[in-house]
Length: 384
Image (cartoon, rainbow, N blue to C red; front, top):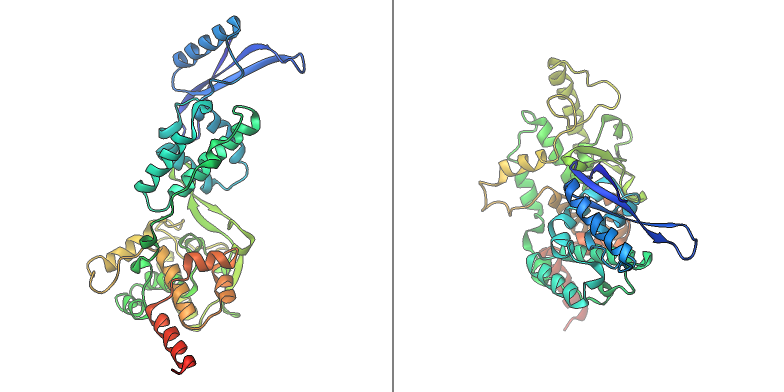
């Protein structure tokens, strides 16, 4: 008889599972059980268990032939979730819930063909410009898990031909700002009256750190004597939209980087201003672990705040600024670093990316000025 249990899934919703005795393991002689999970009601779980129990009693139940892709996904996820950070699991579950499970979730994994997989990947590539590669990658991981545990005899996902991304997307001219545009942007922020806002954007523009790294900074991370900043944590989004603190994903992400004297001066000014402002609100910002950029109750700012500040400044000025996101401040920093003559290794160390290929492929957007300089340099070399 099936054992039905109620549990709460990763989204906080009530679900039901069951475990059922289906015979004896021929290798060990021990009782063999099978389980299913993800049912929305006890009635659904009971009906499914009854069908399996009937198949087992008549000998028509073949080992896991009827297992659904969604069931295999949940088994795979329990293993996968122990190997990555919480923020990664949030992104991955979003991919499955929005794209992968709607395509395959209710299908028996053994019956999903290469043709069906190829068709889904083709459709995904038309739906978005680049993320479809990730959706395919995780779909393949579930099939690989199914192969490993014996649910399928081969992995058809390995034979899928992944469409090439749209080249024009990679050449998006609005990926970053020029030096003149960045300088002009700061002219719209008063460094005294809006000291916090000016300092936050100055740190992003002149260090290249990520938004989450910036919002996780404490005053203990700034060495004013040596003019350095230590990056050792980041604010990110966990389950249920809750903001959490995580260490960088790689060892390269933990780094100490230099701060230029002007940026350091703005940090000093904001520190004094913060002390006065927050003291009036009843907070002692001299306490250990004080955030550099805090919200009104002296906690972590929302990850959306820097973006809102940015768009408040640039949205009504389309002729002056290409529309970019906060993350593109990091792209801009990288591009301008290369334009100023910094080496690949120097930029790599400042950004905290694990390898040079990542820096070149994702961040190195060469400006038109650099292209013209390279062309002129070649012409002078040829002297024809």
